[in-house]
Image (cartoon, rainbow, N blue to C red):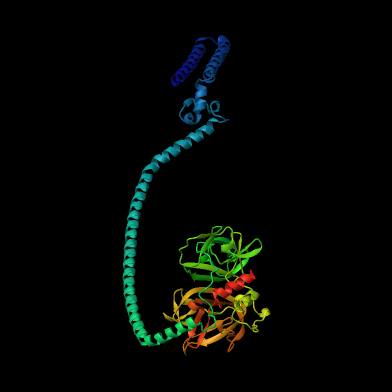
Length: 487
């Protein structure tokens, strides 16, 4: 197609040249008189030739659909700087209006840009080579850094292992020393233990306490897999009962006490609405307070867990899975507390003044966290005592951690010149009697952390001349009888 256009241009050029020769001959060969006639003829012939050329150009340019102009318009952007026809007549092929000078400026810019690219290519290649070399050096530095880091980690690990081994060796030597010290201590106290053991046996068998204050504990308890929906820090979460914290709330009921007990084999556990709970626990059913074992939906199960758990609330109630249980204290009211206590104390408790006591838990006997007690592990603080420890040759069967606020009764005692402690609540030490000497009602500023203990036989021996009832105060049989009257 390009060759065809070039031939037509040459033809046009030859025609123009022929006209010029004819005109030249006419001017040289004709006489002066006929010049005007020849000039008119030449002009006419020139006009005809121009018209023919223009028609040929129009035919060539404005060919039928699919012809040269269509193809050039379609590929205008690719041909605008290479096709001579488009270069000279860009307005016929561009999508919009365009002059020869505009197209020429664009093509000059493209030519300059291509030249710049060719000139910049070697420099770009050099920059790429430098970049790759720098990247290679950086990778080598990174590898060296990683190697040094791993070496440091290994050195630190080996150092920690050496320190741990030295610490373990020291701990074993210290343990051996303590074992020997405890052995000699036991040897020196063996005779005293024989007499004290005999004395406690006599007390237990003859019921020197005129109806011993507490057997082990009563069981208002749940299995450790019990899941509760609680509110903590303004967030509602699900928590196992053994992971509850004091201050959590259940349906706007505040938890003020946490209980953990060693499970006895004769304590039958029932399943009620996917809750494992002791059969003696009180529950509301048909607007009545009954035992779980008497609930029509309760089923006895085989339960092998070592521990059981319970809670103490500010209103004595626990709503768990739409079941309304009483808390560990029955309902945590002073009236219920008096019903329990009357089973061993026949007189009026004149020191109890309802307006000065927040709830019944303020009256239950316990110890402050920083009080010292004698155990088989030596003299320890109350907060360090664990279930299974021995106090006065009696095993700790349960621990109740709670907080007191408002007013309670506080009594100070001394184990010796170095160790002392505080008893809180009303401390019963014999049937129909309670501690009154140096017993003082005090207002607690803020909240006081306390611990209640449940002991085999129901008696906590602080020292030989100080023995008080444990947290449960009264035996299970008497408490159950009182609870049945309440229910």
